[in-house]
Image (tube, rainbow over all chains, first blue to last red; front, side, top):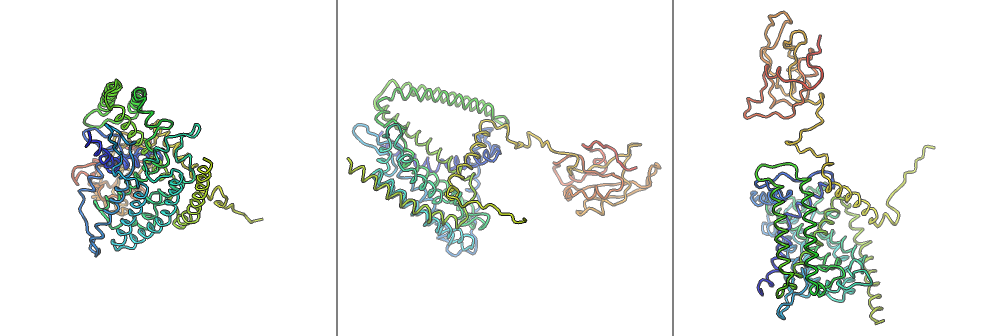
Length: 420
Length: 172
């Protein structure tokens, strides 16, 4: 139990960052398709099982892995050329380490932190590694020895410098509000409510929220700020000379960076793993009721999903009958989950602590995937910002706005503390 | 008179903070997303091997066919070589012989079209003085196991039916 609880956040970090990449690629394609009135990938299958198209992104990853490792002959600094995608990938991956996935779990008077890296310096760690990610892009662009690549790298650099400042300053105003730099304490702070509104960061600091979300888009080089790989002007930007899995690492790094920014936005501004109005203690004390509510929700949602799937899964593939397989799996899983939950609802040992922890993982995951949806939604709505517009927005609007926001926040916080 | 003042956009405060327009755009895309997610049957995508294209008209340049004469159902082609001359891909191979049945003077003994070389430009159809060659079959996919399967000979070309209303040659 001890080892499991210590290893759990590490495993979750790997799951949230690496294992979600195929799902994110699939979401990106499917949401793009549905927004543009298309269908998206729906053919690739393993013996008739398509998982709604997820198999396609698995196939794409396999293709990247098995592709020939190509070395352009003009590249002199092979070490930097090779290490650049690894830096981009690693820094994106490490950013995830400080996100709290659930509240601290207390079992037999031992407190387990649900962070992969049990540190209080969450925000600083995030800023450090989010800023380091662009080093991979710069190094890759420079080592590629290619005009387009270096142009893309320059654009990424200038953009990250401009937006890092506004991002850091908007975070400062959040630090003043919460009075802590520990991410877990920030989430605990957001469990309380003002009058009837939950005290989430988005309610307390709407301007800082907007600034942070906009800068997070720029920081991860995602549309509408993806001028670094602007394919209409500079071929593919910094990864022009990359192929096979070296490109794959850049590609995966972009998605992990997006996931990490999404996780930080959830943690700081959207209440992290908290449900509105319900603190961790409330959940633990009323665990039985919570379980019955979850059971009801599981039954209703799997029924709705089954109905939707039967309507839309119309093209039969060779091999197994997909609709039948899914129906069996979903009904079986729902029944199994209900049996397990009702067994726990009768109450044993630390069931409520562990149960609430699992529930908070689920809440965090739902919020995170909502954020992913927003990232993808924005990408397929907005055209790319022109480069001078990007710079103007960063330096002329977001920077002064975040400075003003800090002053106002500080005045309010000091005033409230003085009043108390 | 004559002066037209074009309205410039993007200078008001609301437009300069972008957010208003961004949320407007996001509303539109979300509408498309939810509508397509709840009912995918309105998506115009054709799932090709299961569903076939519904917009193939007689004017679509498909695989060629040789037409028949209305009077006696014999071949309308008089082996004038106009189509082979007009062909930019040199894919038409004709050998002419004299026609013994008195209907006309000449007819092709061999009329081969190599579909692997054909660019489906339709110049042969335009060049033909007898309306003997047409591309109104509506066939858009030609499948074969080897290269010889793609060389359509006279018998094959005569046997293909068109999808237009005029089945026979319109030449007098």
